[in-house]
Image (cartoon, rainbow, N blue to C red; front, side, top):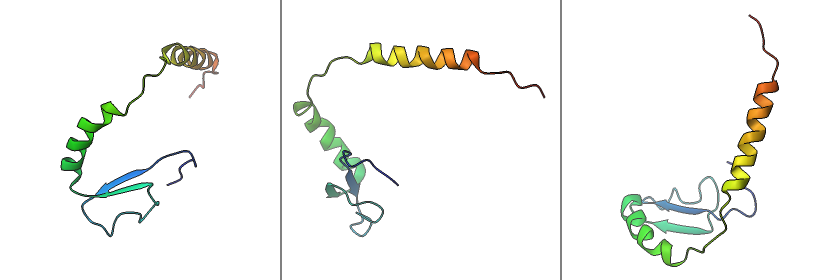
Length: 77
């Protein structure tokens, strides 16, 4: 697995020997994933930040992709 340098990886695993086996995480949590995620879901909102909507950017990308698809040559069998 290849991650960009800016990617923060958090790995949750009940088996400590699995943590960091493929990629070194920035944060390792040795725990049952279901239990850990239940707790993280409660904590994350207080650290989340409000960001501008990227809906317009997404719509533009989708429109460009539709335009490219409509211009693609039709291949005959």
